[in-house]
Image (cartoon, rainbow, N blue to C red; front, side, top):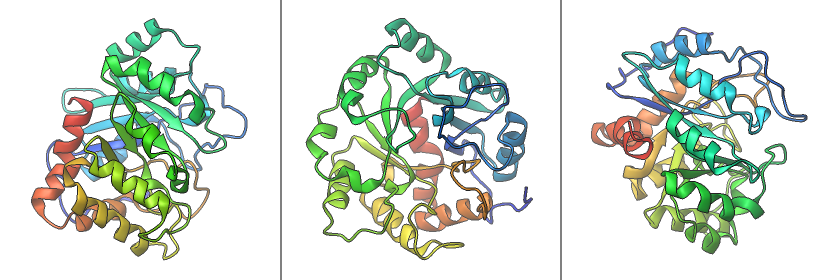
Amino acid sequence: MTDTRPRLPSPVGTCDTHMHIFEPGYTQRPGTNLPSIPGTTADYRKLRARLGITRTVIVQPAAFGNDNRCTLEAMKALTDDTHQTRGVAIVQPGDSDDEIARLTEAGIRGIRYHLLPYGGVSWDTLNTMAVRVAPHGWHVQLQMDGRELAGREAMLKALPCDIVIDHIGRFMQPVAADDPAWKVMRNLVDSGRCWVKLSAPYHGSRTGAPRYEDAGATAMELIRAAPERMLYATNWPHPSLKNNLPDDASLLDLVNEWSGSEAVRQKILVDNPAKLYGF
């Protein structure tokens, strides 16, 4: 692991809103990704110290399905006098309302819909599950090829809870301003109930490392549109990448640059996640 640090010190309360923990001993679902580097709580402690992170949102890996035990144990392990955690869980229609209540009490604040082929969930259960988790104050966290947003605007706007979109939309190829999927994403952001994680710019980037200029242009447009609903995240340990992993400090540097001002940077790193996750 590199020992580089961000060029700017992170403000107190900086939150990593999307990372995963992979401890040994949990059954992996077939076809899903495990990271190419160690992804344990011990390894993440080193990362958060290097980046200046004091709040963390642990997102249940698709690899473990709705067996949320690894995430829940990691939330306990990574919480101490100076660090706080929340979580996002995978919950299936067969899981009970008592289980949702138990997860809420443990610090879960969102339901994950990882809508790529190996995610284990589907669009057809989204509305039903959103109705079930909304009374607990949860949001719906979406990850998909952003091009799938085309035609889903009415459905998503009708959900009874906020939406969080992963990885700058994760458009698997750059889209133009008149693309239907991009228009849906912008309309969702403009609705006031949609948040976007400024993470994993490598997904779909054609310009590539280290600056990911195409993803950066998309991120900056979203920041201009709704700086109060943009979120910083590492996506550590980058489970879908098998080589050429990015430097997490450099990715944080990019988010700091995209922010454009110290006031907006404070919102993205600290204030916005505090509001969404209840820190």
